[in-house]
Length: 227
Ligand code: C5P
Image (cartoon, rainbow, N blue to C red; front, side, top):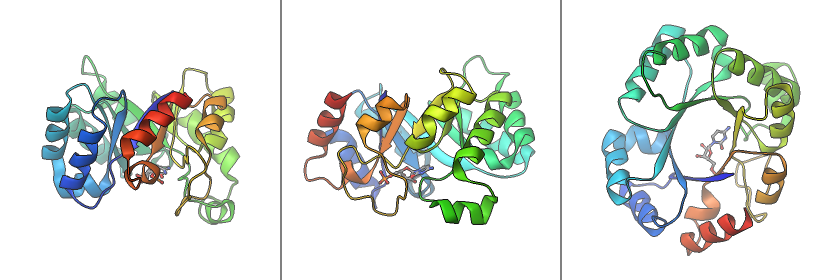
């Protein structure tokens, strides 16, 4: 299991200060919408200057018509990130188009599909998708696998079931992690690090419990020890 730290702070300077504090650790970094819209490619370059070995997950959750998604995926290729994601609900044709476009490159990032956002409660999810989270997440995962993607973003509670309907190697990346039962904030379906490990999760994403801590490095170290 790998730890992926969400860089969701209000300014680039604060995010980079956090990156410096945890630069010794074997962690991935997640650059999301807020940071990328504000700070763009320069931010990615500055992260690599702090430690070129940091792996970056660009969490932009693409959702558009197939051709536009494939165009966007190709632009992401040029950024040199290690992982990015799309919404599974964009459909199999869109996901396949993305993978087809990337197939001409010798190496490509890991591509994941978002199943159900971890902020959804069961009722809210049914309101939008007219199906329960567990079965829809399984369906999205099967769609993503048959479209050639490498894995999905889901909650830790769906990870084991998704692996059983796909393969053990099909990756799961789970936000909504409160490593030691910390405050959930707006997340609805939260699990701790031990649960995630038991559910065969490949990547846990942790944001607020790390960047809001008075000593983020200490929390990172504690989580890595837990692994
Ligand atoms: O602060 P917290 O640990 O809740 O942060 C979780 C991060 O994971 C946020 O950046 C959020 O946008 C992201 N995320 C999520 N649920 C998803 C996909 C991404 O919470 N399904």
